[in-house]
Image (tube, rainbow, N blue to C red; front, side, top):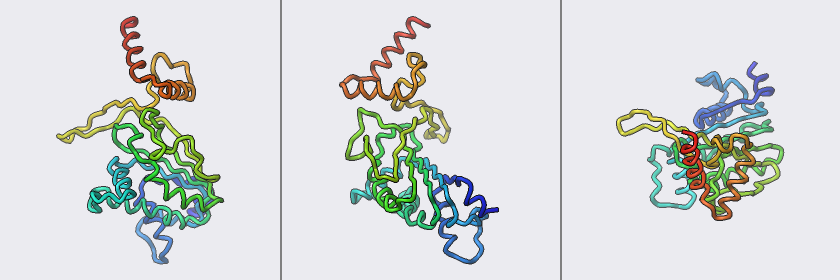
Length: 238
């Protein structure tokens, strides 16, 4: 049964530690502790990895890539960083893999654009591009045109023939724990600002993204325009 699942299903994983243990279990002949490892790694055809990691994780990766002396391998995210650094080695155990989907986000309200995508992904993508028979899709949140930078982000760039970067909407609502340990739901309006707004309800996402990006490139403050337009609607439609 496990072999059939490996060959016919998309296997979804949302934890780096589990993925690492599963792959390493294929190196030993003795029985392993968790049932998931019974699925033969070497026969998996399609793998989907979904990771929503602390923002501190991405900042640690950036510090490491820049040889920042302030980085500490005792930080709470250090284990995740080590697992991420050997992800390519982990994926090498998936010998039959034909399709890999990797979805990344951080778990705080700040815009995604604060993440250095290149320091996070450059090494991994270089390694994956050496597997031309592997179709890779990297799904990242949309970039805010006001803050995106070529040296930090993948902007209108083809990675390689077998790797594509796809941009997705980021949730506007986030669960935040306050100083007293209580969970509060906060809303942070990431790009595109007008999505799901009253004035744009009849427009598709691609049109909204194109219009907002064009406005920012022209030097207009689209967030201010959106806020002023919304306030005007509140005056006319109380």
